[in-house]
Image (cartoon, rainbow, N blue to C red):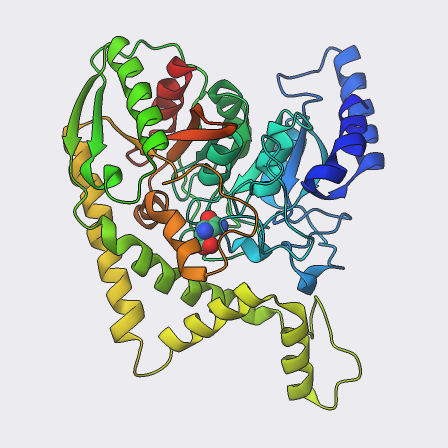
Length: 445
Ligand code: GLN
């Protein structure tokens, strides 16, 4: 009730929620109270949280930030939603996001931009901007996001919270509206690494309904949080400290690394030589997969349907023209082009080959060091409306995108401010080293 009151009072300024589920939240809280009274409460019983509006929720609308799904009510819960419910958590609602998770500022939402709680003239980052802003403003202690090319880590950095993108395959994608299926991954966004550890434990695990979800036990992610960092080998990728990095961000990251040295870690420079190919490779692969995934929105089975179609082709054309926003259309056009006959080898296949090299860069680096550290984003949160040109927006993703191409886990943790705007330190590890990353993040907090 306290948090629902805060949402009522404050979210008019932030626009971080698309749907607030008052009745369901109060009923779930009631059930949690009863479980507690009966001595059946677990650690997360009654924990309020919010879900990015990309996770299907039974009986509650799921929009993916798009006019296309403005009236869509899923007949089932996503696996992540099911698992979090089973753990006793209480969802307060669905958070705002860039349309179909395409964006780095949350300005691509059909439901309007989200404001950064630290500075209402700044973006909260994207695409999980609503989740990040809601946690930063204290509307919920935790929220769930998705990260295809940085959408958990970059908004976490811009809003001064902790966010974790797990290894690809660690968390089920079933019921998560698909953007780029080979890159999408859900993860927790919260105040601390400890909270993220608790949430990841509840979200992760094998799911027969997602064939890419890995059959591997889920450890207790809180167990290693207090392990001392003596002897930890940290690598600083040379390519993450080059041109375009804001000096205040660089200073904050270097200060954080000094803290790690004082905790007993050793630091050395490493190289990820294919870094500069990450943005071009991603912006071929992600739109290609998106153009295929988004072909299901045809005005026939679900989603927006235009009024009075003349015939079937008119129905497809106008439903899609009206239902999708500009950035989504741009990506569908790019993806359809790169997958078309005669261009496939030159673009999509080439990008997949580059992806392999990028992945190998990380595997080579993790032969030498335990974790990599650098900035989560080249700048602190920028002003709302500042990046009108799509390419300048894509360049924002320089430090986050390669991680998804490689499938490895990554975190952003708060590491200071530039004026009133937070800065995020990014911590990367090899596949399935989430417990180690959480440990490293926790020791800094
Ligand atoms: N900014 C990137 C994009 O627009 C990443 C988004 C994401 O991770 N969902 O595709």
